[in-house]
Length: 349
Image 1 (cartoon, rainbow, N blue to C red):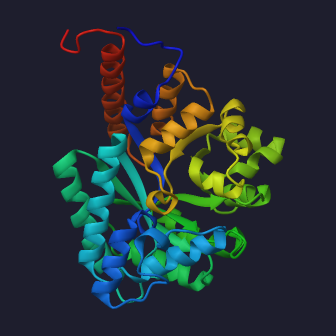
Image 2 (cartoon, rainbow, N blue to C red; image 1 turned 45 degrees about the horizontal axis):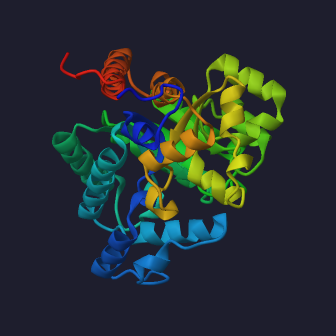
Image 3 (spheres, rainbow, N blue to C red; image 1 turned 135 degrees about the vertical axis):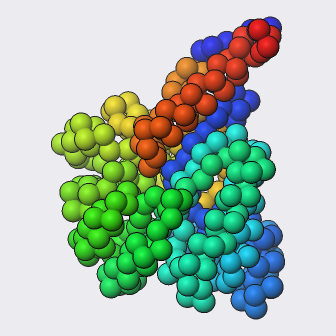
């Protein structure tokens, strides 16, 4: 029996192939795993009860939990296990095919950058071998630390280049370090051929979005919702092809759980390049499949619109043209197969 093409069902939204560009390794640790890592490494969390660990009411409380869980990851083995588990889980729950995942090296002072990288590469390569999901890495600056820490981190990344590390970013509390403080670190990254992204405009400051684009030279913005408050910025971001890697569940946190207040729909309507991402999935009780279901149903997406959204970020992925073309072909084939199955055609025809 054929399915209505005007409706993107939860099953269709979850089954679509997905690429995401805004997901944090440290925010992808299941609560049970975080408790186990803390116990194994002698690190104290605020609670050893996994049912309570990820309960928080404010963004600041969330960051406290994020930093504490980061501290529980102290060995290359920890990084390998978390990377493998979060990638295979995302493939299982939401048909993730490609991810560019951030991690915060300076949140793990017990390890050197090469030690973290060793574990991460082991985990993501094993995940690709077992599931086919591809992953690249974004080294994230903690903006609550000093610009000199950021410069040293970028120097470390440049000194230990590998193909899987494709970009730098900046995250943590946007009300701490302004983009202007990190210009030198971003210039060094650009000179070394690294791509650039930044968390900006999550908490209502459109100037931060503008400064990230104009001062840091970013190609993508994580969140970026405040762009809508500046019509000139919307126009320039659209014309420059700035991509916005948005997240539904974290938007709910900022808007008291009201989906009608989330800016993602208006951003799409304004013609901005937008993708749906999972951010810190277990910490917000979500996954990439659930994010598509929430966004798709709240925005009343048709199947064609949902498929377009699934492909939306591929043109902004930090890959070369050969890999971009390959990913587009993979997505097109999977979407065509899914549509044929739902429209009542034999997928072997």
